[in-house]
Length: 215
Image (cartoon, rainbow, N blue to C red; front, top):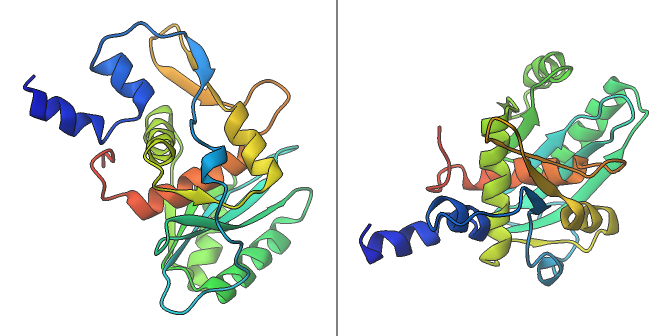
């Protein structure tokens, strides 16, 4: 490929993806995904919308012992400014918390995981008028969202609040090569990745028009 095309690809792919797919480097089958996380922990927390700012909320529903996480992303600043994490709460109460968050931030998109229990919850949220955009999590769509988030950190195009749970999940998040050759992303055994996925969904909603996104 011409050097100009290689340079253009470098700006649209995470460092790990570029090394593997373009430079044909044989990388370890597992390892950390996100770089420069601590440098990004400079966002100022927000409790409600700032004037003339646009917001997106990413929703990762909890299952069994997992947590439900609502991440509010200030698309105007490129910053994750509010994280609400909870579990063992009735789904009607969870939806009430999401609707309360929407009242405070008036998001133009709410990106909601639609797998499993998500579908009936999405139907209810649409009926009450929230700007819901379902996200069907598959290996391919999860890879797109995670790669986009990793690129955002590498290019220092995203900031996050210094939330200890969110930071710990980002630093521990890893990838593993499956026998099929595909990559699987997730938390190490005994840890959660709900904050990571909620942030990835919010960031995905803000950057879905970028070149890394495949419709």
